[in-house]
Length: 84
Image (cartoon, rainbow, N blue to C red; front, side):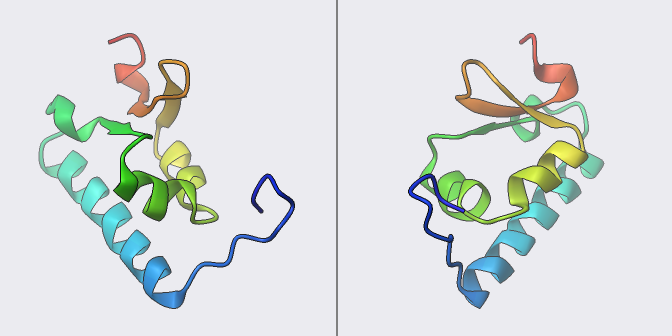
């Protein structure tokens, strides 16, 4: 639900794109877990806003796999990247 109290309506296409992005994030981390570019997501990014922040459950999924909001809520980062 949006802060205005209105439900967040997300199209089927947006959900499918979000699932694809979440899958790619996971694949990248599994393929190269030490690569810092796969360990942070900028919340100001239009793609992150549209496909993570605005889609119910997407950010919670990332939190479930170890991402946390950091840097005054400007990024989502894997747990090990919080202090960087």
